[in-house]
Image 1 (cartoon, rainbow, N blue to C red):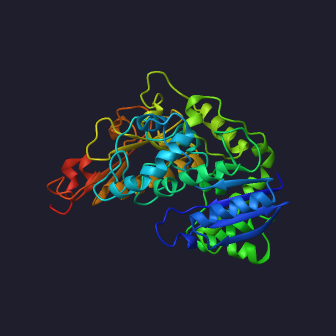
Image 2 (cartoon, rainbow, N blue to C red):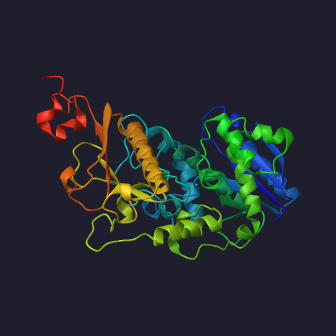
Image 3 (cartoon, one colour):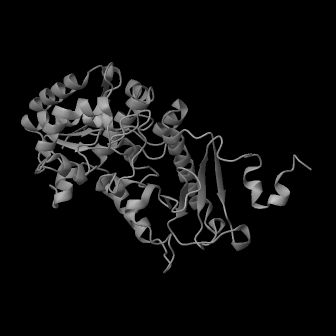
Length: 399
């Protein structure tokens, strides 16, 4: 493959053309970075572009499918049937936001057994990222709107001779699903200076005005970096094969570099576990977020709505026995969990804390951090917060 094209997609109902960015790397150089096309125009452009030069891989930034159980619920027995159903019903789903869709006012995240596709669970934590649910169609981090408005276009590309991985045998022109966070890594993309510093660290593929344009917005940045990373791994992409099991053949897969996938798998597999420890034996279905070194799970005995625990993957009795790097990763996950709960539940405050050691109230000898949303009226007088672990000393304001 001589060319890699990455598209930072948008599900916006209006003015999507200003948010959709296309980046192309040819022969090791970023040769174009542009916006200005709406969804239909972009797909038409890709078809015409591939007709002129089919030796290309295109990365599209939206989910290509839903969890398998939802496809079965709809009666879809193939990915093409599912895309057709999305084309026919998708706008109704977006309008009504009926379960399992969520994210609009009054539609909080449902507790689903398989809320994410397998590929989203597998890729989460690869670069400190949370998995994203295609059912979320509103609120911060929503990917569902763009995906629902993107899937029907995959059927169009397929009809024009594109191979859509992993549903079809791999040949060019090829389309793969990408998630830019897995390709950019943990950079603060909302900060211009952070974007600029990141690109200055080592992206010789970008030069001159195109390099500057790549720092101009998050969308341009995602498209440019994704195209470069794809181009660096064309051998990996060329070696892809069609799905070998029923789940992947209907759910699809996110592509990300093999070296990152293997590093993530190794870090998870190396975690030290202890028999009979409830936090060493957490089922994947109970995980609501994760990072390289930690998992977030709902508390089995919550003291408030959304009460969540962040636990290290590796068994350790005290959080403070871990390295600075591991602790930073764990607290980063705490921050992301808090942000998610703020977005979903809109609490009035939080208690975030650690019971460290038996004298500190720790009853499970595996370190864990409580993230507890607080709501006005949930306590008669919330003043003092965690000071109430020693009630006789809590009310310092009332001697």
